Image (cartoon, rainbow, N blue to C red):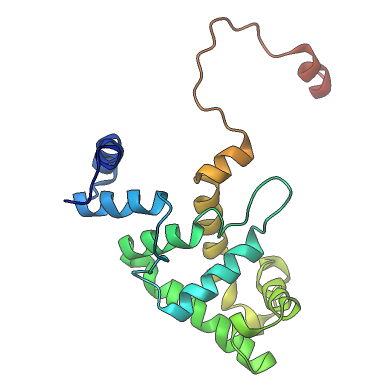
Length: 192
């Protein structure tokens, strides 16, 4: 606590109601708030092994890559978010570890290397085989539930980050002094 300054304490105080809603401990609130700040030292995952974490970073950036509007999932802190969530939600841990292991095994079977050492085209080829549940080959069907869950967690992390909120141009609950109804241009476009 000796290294906490006034700003850090204010952030923690603001996070207290959120922590109470999620039943987080004080230590978990501190950890979550640390994830939102730019760290001096590189992030060290708590749940993921070093290799798993490298795989997660590569995979989230294939799901939400950097574009002209915003940065990638890694730029938004999604791998750190996932590490925090998985450390908290123990019921998801086996499925995540198993899915990451399956991804490496599938890449070894096809290309004789793990996912992070595959080329971009090789990675995309494996993901294309598990990203479309309706078209999945029975040989790769084990990867579908993992990828669906991973993709959902990636999207949750990105769209709840500051970068994702800015990308959506979400303004939050803003005061509207008068409501004049839906704009005529929108009604016309909807055919109403």
